[in-house]
Length: 275
Image 1: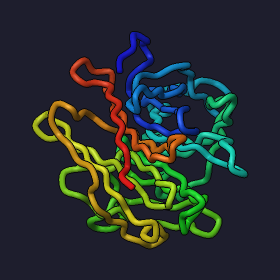
Image 2: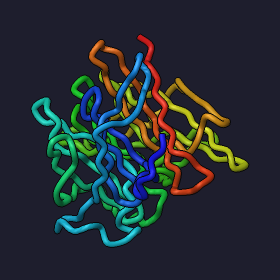
Image 3: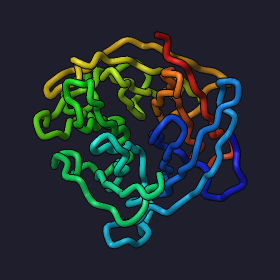
Image 4: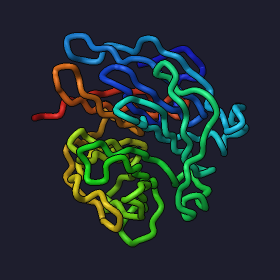
């Protein structure tokens, strides 16, 4: 997947609005929205694509790289309908929400309150993963935030839950050689965590499945690796999305961040989740 558009690249987060339409964010403060098309069941390309600037609470473009490093995105559903996009930023660590207009994020940011220990982080190893628990989850409606490389408890990456009834910190047990880069819930409430590794200038990746009842305040989340890879088919995977096709099939989609480097690639891979 390539594009001559100068703003296309640096994709660091992915979320699906429905079975076809998606929104991505880039680490240079851009929204990328459109539809992921299929041909014979396989991804065939992107259509109806638009690239938009992410704006601050005053409606102005984000002023610097430090403030515009968007790393994660999730869709907020209200009364069963997509209502907003929730975005996580690192460096100037924060969570912001944006209206959805015709399936595209728009307008000024509305900041979402997060724990002080998160706002105090001012590094590119802070907020990396943001996902919202579905109705089937024990913590339905709560927002899960996972840091990329920050620890508060030995052997765990720091995480927190934002919810009315399920608010509190938790952790993700470390896996050897990888760091979490995105998360997404399955419709049944189980959690997927995308993790990326880099060694000897070669990338690796894996996806862990964490049971729904393990996502709760105070927990140390662990789980089973259901997908892993390395070599030429793998790059800097940072975005993870889940969608349900009209036939009921659950698809897992991952996308890589090329960091606007000529030796990295923007790749999109999609997998079917077995029944």
